[in-house]
Amino acid sequence: MAQTDLRSRIDTVRRFNRFYTRAIGVLQEGWLGSPFPLTEARVLYELAHREKPTATLVRNNLDLDAGYLSRVLSSFEKRGLIEKKASQDDRRQSLLALTEEGRRQFAPLEERTIQQVGGMIERLSEDEQRRLIGAMQTIEKLLAPAERPASGAPASYLLRPHQPGDMGWVVHRQGVLYAQEYGYDERFEALAAEIVAQFMQHYDVKRERCWIAERDGEVAGSVFLVAKSRITAKLRLLYVEPAARGLGIGSRLVGECVRFARQAGYKKIVLWTQSELDAARRIYKQAGFRVVRKKRHRSFSRDLVAETWELSL
Image 1 (cartoon, helix red, strand yellow):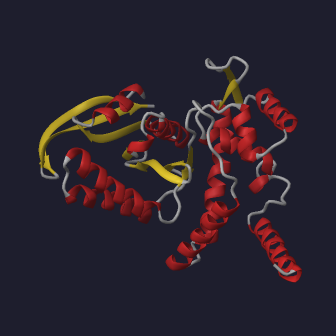
Image 2 (cartoon, rainbow, N blue to C red):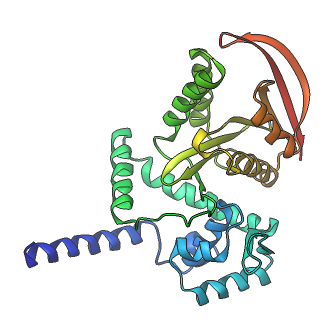
Image 3 (cartoon, rainbow, N blue to C red):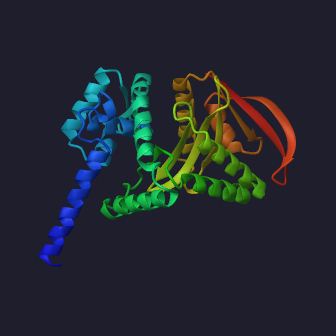
């Protein structure tokens, strides 16, 4: 490659970096008007979207200096934002988790981030949004280092808000998996599509959420929490990809629904499921839900027993 070509490409990358840091407000003293600088906000994000990570995992994911991260975590602990618990697998390691106060302080930051990113992309057409997301994914795949988990280490995943393209994928996978695993016909996929369409058309960022579980850059599961009334939320369309089952993703998704519902001021969460969905029912029971109603019906070409579950908050 000619030296002039290399220099031109370097200048292009640097110009893009300057543009994007301005666009997302990286240079502000507090990230999105919060009391947290950008790096602290990134640490909070890792803790909020991972299931009890170690400091080593957070440091590696964010490429932070160990001493700097230690000071950030000590500050968080003094402020009551995080709690530490010794790992049963390695007593030298501590498992980190946000406290209720930590989640309370992180919640508005998460909401502002979603609003900011939404404001950036909603002025683009559907085709432009797909091109933008595709370009971002290409950059990430080309520049991200190849990472492989250590032998015997638990597979990691993260939870994130929904983004363009997720909704179609969720409907597609719901239709495929319920047909393969339970024999449901296309009417179940139609129901999933209707639920997703209503969520997108009436999305209330303050009171509703979709969480996407992501593993190795691929969607591994999802769940929705939507408003049923002023005091009641409804959990919908929980699913986990077969290859990602056994990692605790389903329990984590339901746990996020419960935490968010409390923060949003709901008094109760309800959900509708079928008696044959044993894995999902175990998760609901562990989270504190209880069956309040059963009804036999024929849907999706099957004779089923529908169950309504509730959780008081």
